[in-house]
Amino acid sequence: MSVICLSGAPGSGKTTIAKSLAAHTGLQCGSFGDYVRARAREQGLSTERASLQRLGQSLVDQGPREFCKATLDWLGWAPPHGLVLEGLRHVSVYEALPGLVQPIQVCLVFIDVNKTLQRARLKSRSDEELSQALTTDPTEREVSTLRDRANLIVSSLETPESAVAAITSWIGERS
View 1 (tube, rainbow, N blue to C red):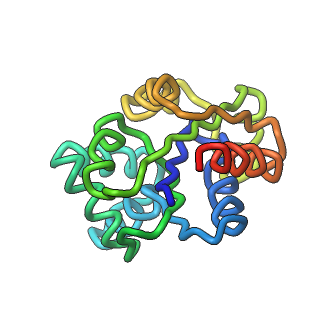
View 2: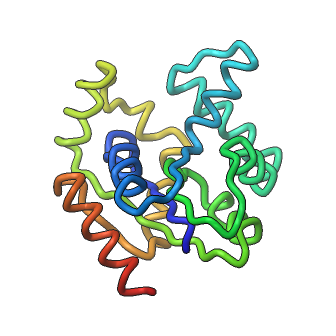
């Protein structure tokens, strides 16, 4: 079993791929973003992207290990079960996670997306634009550094099914 973390830019298909991967593998699916949204609602904060980015950054700044633990507890997850965990945005969170999920291995899958497809996806789901503010936010800039740490890079130009097939094949090769 593994904790499979999915990272990528907004609109890359992380959530769709995570849900499909979890259904295909029988693993629980969770989201860092869903945890941050739940915290925002508890605190009466906006769930707009900029507000969530600020809150998420604040939670990580308070301690990446604590952020990971709170997310895993909120999900009701514990070893030795596997997990598909999407929305990884911070290197420090990625580095803190293995210590919390031992003896389970953490694998990082990065979902690549080209700007044209990303724009179309953002526009279709929330009428959001691929703006300068979105791409220059410190959280979003950090996501690109996670690409360099990924165990596997999958193109979101593929269908979610083909991305899931590539990920499950890769998982099978590792077992």
